[in-house]
Amino acid sequence: MLAPNHWEGNVPDIPNCNEFNVRKRREMRAPLNDYTCLKSHTWCVMTSFQLVGLPFEKFASLFALPDSALAERNVHRVIATAKPGYPCRVSLADAEIGEELLLLSFEHQPAGSPYRSSGPIYVRKAAVQANVEPGMIPDYIRLRSMSVRAYDSSHLMTDALVCAGHDAASAIQNLFSSNEVAYIHLHNANRGCFSCAVNRV
Image 1 (cartoon, rainbow, N blue to C red):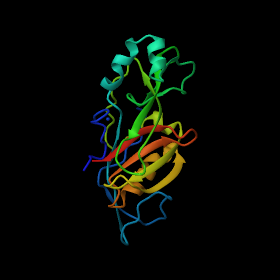
Image 2 (image 1 turned 90 degrees about the vertical axis):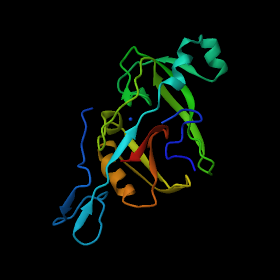
Image 3 (image 1 turned 180 degrees about the vertical axis):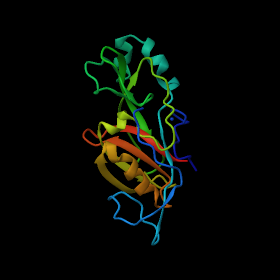
């Protein structure tokens, strides 16, 4: 069986942020928001999570190729002209204006299931793989509307929802409250592009 983030075949298996306490119990004396996990009568058990950026090594050699060679691979070299606007899937941060990036197709769901899929992503030339602390949501996510998609261990989608980026942590907690959810993928809701994977920790 493949691991939740099974990029080893094509790529291996990351901050003004919000932090959710790990496995924190609290009384539910008042109504909670739409994404809060409601377990039993009195307690809400929070499961922590971690966002995962793609490893840069898979893309590094492409930056040395001329544009003609990139075109043969359906890859475009672009320069960021706005911020935000060019979200890098390695660093989980938007490129600075004037930065070089590659726009290419990436198989973000390579599992042998009906949900196998690929789509366009940006990668910054100077990207360093993000190391996001558990429970943290970076501005890369907070600034965008997100589609939050839950998968089971057979890589079948079990649930999904759309939320504002600043509500992503609550949405992730809500989906992970189901034991059948093995991992989550975030996509930009407007254009549908893969943003990053989310693991339980």
